[in-house]
Image (spheres, rainbow over the protein chains, first blue to last red):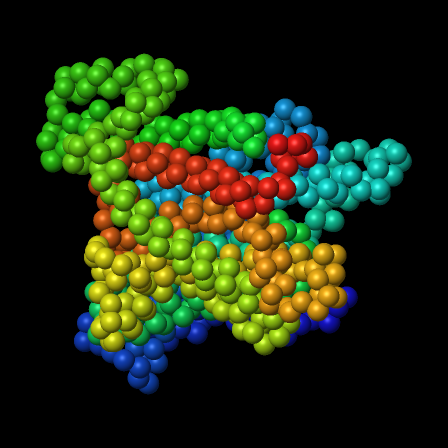
Length: 274
Length: 313
């Protein structure tokens, strides 16, 4: 194993810190994130409120600590969901080929044919906002990209000598797929997962900002920014604090993806492009 | 080239068909009775009889596949239905707003090409050096900035504090500068990254080694020899990045109060105006697919060596 790079350690540490502060929010937050105190509204940084208060006098630090929980949880589960489906479709299609593969490819092309965010807004708009609909929107726009890459990878690995050899030894297709082809793709899959998770969190943030994702008064970073649209000119900390939080989360994810790519030495154009 | 184009067009047909099917299913999934929704504009409460007549008129009593065929037939004639909210034809409203989004997308695309290829080329030419590392970090920062936050920060800095640029609204190029910068942020980062890796791949090939052996300068080698060959994957990616721009334009148009199709879709969501949303999905899907085709054609023009599926063109 190669030595771990500074990038890898830095980004994982940042990510762990963000996730931990979200997990421990109920223990370390100084106030209830939704407690309204109109006498202390729009305050700057102070000892009582280290990151100030918003237009309703809610403590910004407490809200910022709670603010990542929904995005991280939803982003990761939506990515995992679309990845699992994309993996199955891509591996089976790539390995067996034939009519099912062609049908899956056409289906994936259709879903890739509609710009992701446009489709998400349409789904969230028609089905109404809400966690299950959000998951559905993220899943529907995410799986096709995975399945295409997994399919190409499966096609490539299927032709390798050791797969041929195992086949000659009598290995069945599902044993080959699960025990030999999948582990060989795993590094790429992990790189893809981090890249995609970042994008998922970003789309989720945009949807929440537009009022189609996580709904106010839930303490969420994007909701906090959206709430501050009237007051941010006089009180910039209202958008600086939550915005920096989203930025750090995404930056950690992107950097981690980069570092993992270097670590695993993934050179495929498909993965780079993603 | 022509047989390839025809094959490509034929392969796009199922995709376009699928997009229309998706848009139809989205419309069919709407909660509530479409006939009632269409009639109850402006707080009006239709009678049961009116609803029944409207159902008949809208063809809602037909089986779903029939409904789809009728709907698709109307779409092909350019009829996307009537907006529940304004009562105007959806196609007319979309077409009135489309130029604004198109202008925004064109400005962003120009910035994406300029910034993306510029940064990517500089990073490849100085591979492993400080410039390369700085550009790598800048790319990661660009990818990590949520568009709505970047937009608000820019308004805060350039419009509120420095007063250089107008906050929002539709007008000349001055009004387009901030929105298109925001919209091109992530696209130009992806382009820069791909340009860099495509260039490095080219630079590892023999013709580049040979050119270097003859003493050609690094910059000249990168720009004159490697860049044209690296342009093919980059153009394909640029075609794809238009999809991201169409999606991102929803956020950007909302923050900068631009009356394009993105803000139209948002209003449609707020008003539960389903035909408008359906039309929006159809339009963006079609534009996206066609832009992919255009990128393909440009890629072929840039590099005539591309032989589709190994056959002679």
